[in-house]
Image (cartoon, rainbow, N blue to C red; front, side):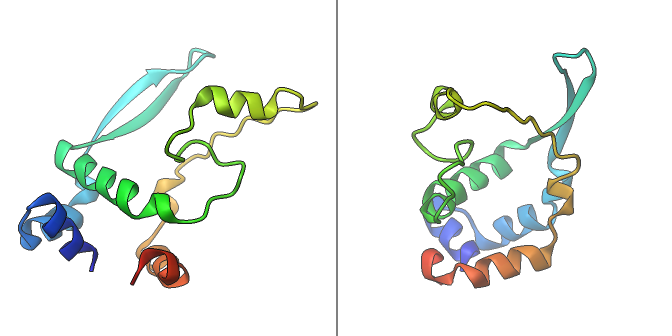
Length: 123
């Protein structure tokens, strides 16, 4: 269903979308950026075609899913200022940096997520 959706909305051949999906893990460029403490942070930048597909999936599908009220990073129409204002009267602040978060997500996790959210995803 997702491949057909992307094919229709991006005017791409389904076989091309499948090939991008199968090779997605190889379609990231590694780079490092400096953290405030001077250490390096490894980042992965998706290729243009993969990023375009990710944007369509986020804009047309994922943004329709319910989100916790505390989530700002992927909520369309919110920004860093909104996040800061939500915490301005708080007594504590916690900063977390999850290591290898995206690498920990596997195919079974995605299948379960889709199954658990069929009502929202229209599947």
